[in-house]
Structure formats: C-alpha cells, structure tokens
Length: 503
Image (cartoon, rainbow, N blue to C red; front, top):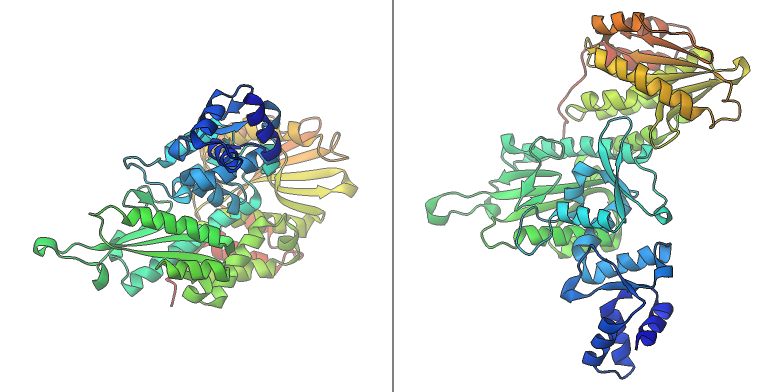
C-alpha cells in the first residue's frame, strides 16, 4: 500500500493528502480505503509546523524537499487549504519577497485576536518554523525585516527598491490621510497611520490608514447613541495591483466586517494602478479602488514613482541629473511633512552627487557588500588608486551627531566595511580607502573630543568627519550644480519646507 502512495508522490510531487485521496478515489478506491492507505503509508514525510483545513497534511518524499518545485507545491497547498498563509505569501511576493516585520500584520490581513482564526504572530511563527520565511536585520536602520528563506526565491533583503517603496508608501499614506480628513471621511483628529505608535486597527485587523467615520451611511444610533463606522485604507506602491492581491484585500475586508457587532466599514485600496481584472473584482466586492493619480493628480503621482526610481538607483541618475532630484523633492513637498520624511533617505544621493561633482570618479549609492554591511556612498577614483566611503547622518537643521553614533561608526562600521569590501573589487585588495562621516548638522562636543583621541591614519585606510559648515563651504565649488546647492539649502540647512497638499 505504501508503494502506491510513494508512486503517486513521485508522479505528482509534494502535495496535500486530500489531493492523493482524490486521485485514488478517481481510480476506483473508496474514500475510506484511500484515507487509510495514506495514513498507513511509510517512507513519506509530513510537513510539521503548519496546519491545513479539514486535517489535511502536506506530504512528500525526502528527496523532494527544499527545491523550487517543493515550495511551489507548498504555496499551492496554502491557496487551497490554508488561506491565512496564502494571503501572507501573496503580499510578500508582490513586495519583492520581503517587508519590515512591523508591516507583516498589515500584509497578511489576519485578525490579531479572534477565536478560530490565526493571528499574524502565529502565521509568522509557523512559516519561520518550516523555513519558508526568516528574520533579517537591516544594517542601516537596525529594523527587523521578514524575507523568504529558500534560495529559489532569490531574495536578498532589504534591497534598495524595497526600502524605496516603503518610504514612498509612507508619503502616499500621509497624503491619503490628509485628503480623507479634508473630505470628512474620518474624524479629523483620530486618523491612525501605518508607522504610528498605535497602529491603525479596526475589527482587530491592521490597515495602513484608519479613522472613525461619521459619514451618514456608516453611522448608526442604537438606543439613541450615535455610533460611528470606520474608514480604512491600504496602500501599495511600486507595481500594478493584480486580481490576486485584490482577492487578499477582499478576504481581509470580509473578515473585518464579519463580526455582528462591528460598525460598517468603508474600504479603500490605493495603488499606482490596477489590472482590469483587479479593478473589476474590487468593484464587484464593494471596495473603492483608486490610483494615486486619481486622488492627487498626475504630477504628484509621477513624483511618487520618480522617488522610487531615484531611491532604487545605484547612483548614476543622481550623479548625472541633480536637477531631476531637486524637481522630485519640490513636487513632493506638496504633501504635508514630506521633506521631513525624505531628508534622511535622499541625503545619501545629495552627498554622493556633491562629492563626485568635485572629485570626479564613479559613484555608487547604497552599495550592499554583504548581509552585514552596506555603504551609503562610494566614490571610486581609479586613476588615483583610492576610494571614498561616506556614511551619512541627515539631521534636522541644527541637530547633533551623538557620541554613541560616532563610536558605532568608528568601532564597528569602519572595521567591518574595510574587511568586507576588500574581496569585492578587482583592485580593492590594496586600495586606499578614505572613510568619512558626513552630517548636515554638527557633532556633539563629546563626540568631537572622543574622535580627536582616535587614530585616523592606517596602512590602507584613513578616517575623517565632516559637519554641515564644511559641506556648505564644499558645495560652493564651481563644479557643483546649482540644483545640488539648492537641495542642500532648502532641505538640509534651512528650516524644512512643509505645506499642506492642495487638492
């Protein structure tokens, strides 16, 4: 009997026991006999750590474990008998295979606490247990990310594009909240956004934006007391929404609306664009599907997309066209608080562009040399046999780089990068590297005192630091673009520009 099960697994590949039983029933075996054959089969392995609907088990032969076919079969099993896991897979795959851990509850769309429903924490724990997902640390921010683990997914997280999309989504979320406030979709002072200390949760489910709503169709008055409904919205940038993603959102929305005591919910799904099938599916489910261009106009929508491209670039575009960088920033400041959110993300591009305008050479921004080390700015000066490696600390004008930040850079970052980068370039083994720490602000007196006591000259590298006063003077050189000077003046040396988005 075991041979029959193994033969089927060899033919079908890894699959759910329910699928094997169906196959045997189609061949004339009774359902009870088929179930017993599967239960008694030897020489097969059951995937432990996740549970499927109706007690189905995922089974496979040992030699089938771990390749692309295996994980594809796991995903197919999730779609048919494990929708909670399937929703998480769809969300992650459409984001390039990774997301900040803090965003995982929003992506998977599961209720935080609900009887007979898997919570986001449980889903994540089980998917890590079967080695489908893993946690990784972002070397730049220290933030924990969730990423696909098997090599067949080919995910090295977080990538520049994944960071860029997360940053751009935060801007879009702020703009959507401002738009919804002005139109009265939610109570003005009670909007919750993705990165707030208290996340936007309605009916136990996490969203990107939420607010109690007093729009008439959503309001009820049980026993004479006015009870608001809710405005909720999820935002996805960087790609066109598929019907599969809409299906995940509809499932999430239905779970939120299903408890009998939950007030009516008005759901928005905002993206760069939708396939026709996705748009039709959203409309048929009563979901409001909207694009950023429909909400804010073509100019702001294009600026958001341009921002993703700029932040995902390895430095070439920023170096060639600083005017484009300034133009993107100026358009995005129509979104309230945009300049404050963008200051840190774009400082590396501004510094890189400034540096290469003066020194020449080949510029790379955001160069990941290992899972532990990433360079903010790298300028290779091949003819001079040296390279400049800059770590950037963007500050609110007048703020200081702390002693702790300086010590981490000098004691940890510089030695780590110096070790990891040597094998990467053909001529890096004996290259002279100049490590510098740049800030538009100043250094705390304790940091300056400590740095002054450290060694700065080594056999194959040097260490230095530059503050805002130095950068301002450095930017006055003739080879520096007026656009670069304008960016530094408007966003890094003067008070940040902020304005309310005008609809």
